[in-house]
Image (cartoon, rainbow, N blue to C red; front, side, top):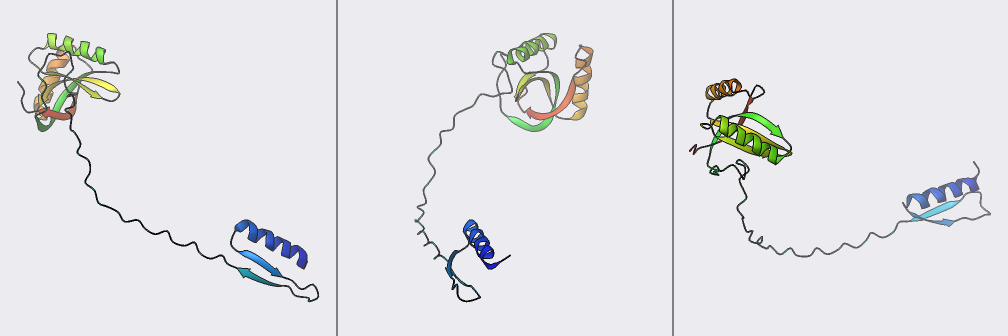
Length: 164
């Protein structure tokens, strides 16, 4: 590659890369070309504005509806959890009205157990009981399977302390 093509290549490369501004001092009479590079001045720093500490605005805590019991269930809503326990899931659907109808049907068949409609997006799940241990949950599951809920199974869930 001759010197002229090399100079054009180097000039184009430097201009595209934006690394430096090239100032060419070429002397056509001399056999060598000399280049001097000018590096731009760094940008001046932007002064940091002082940060004024402020307290966060007061947030109003609104009571949110309990998603454990359906709106039309007629049961007392409670959020007094005693901890982790077991429930038996008997039905799951995407439609709230279907879950409510299944829960009402289960209440009519089994009035002694607490029936809950829980919303776990996107599903509404109908669950039975507040079992504190797995043995108790196994007994409830066996009873529900005899009643016709053949696809029921035990799930780990938060259980309510006041099982009134």
